[in-house]
Length: 237
Image 1: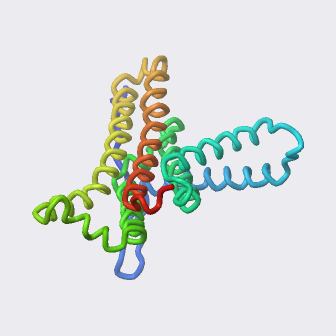
Image 2: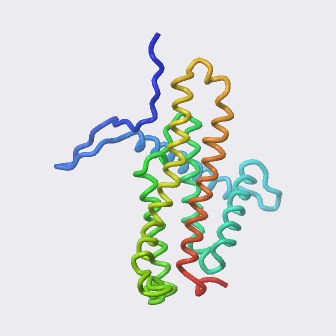
Image 3: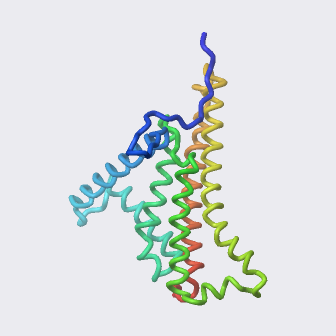
């Protein structure tokens, strides 16, 4: 009888060489590609369903799900970003939420969630970080720089560290929560292979579904709140 293996690591599948530069196609790349394919298919199907819909009748089935999803996201973004910022960031925040949610839920289907790789969560947080800085300068102009010296100039180093701590904290929060769930499920299946099939549904419900949805929501919410705060009162109605 072979030993039960506990495996929650990132594996390299193929090394790719481009001139003097080389990189590995890893578990993360493969799983992220699968997630992207799923989202693209979802978008294509959704587009066709919407085009063929008869809006003289009440929506049913998949169209009803789409309308609920869009209305929920639109209301969430409007409530947190206001009427000036919401139209600008509706597409970005919605896409960000759906991407992270799908990545987090991919563990239900035997994939290693891409968000359990810091190389995925950090770039997502950096995109948000640059948007925060851009909106700050766009709406506050020199007030953005002035804010770094508040309440007085000695707080400049602290305020600068606080600015750069934002993408680090956002990326680490998402990465650590998803990685911990991935490790726990790998330990359950690896160390208790014979009986784990019977009862891990409850663990999947929490670690993959509940925690996955929660972390996607938290990341999207922090994105909206930080961008709104950076824009300041000038962007609020």
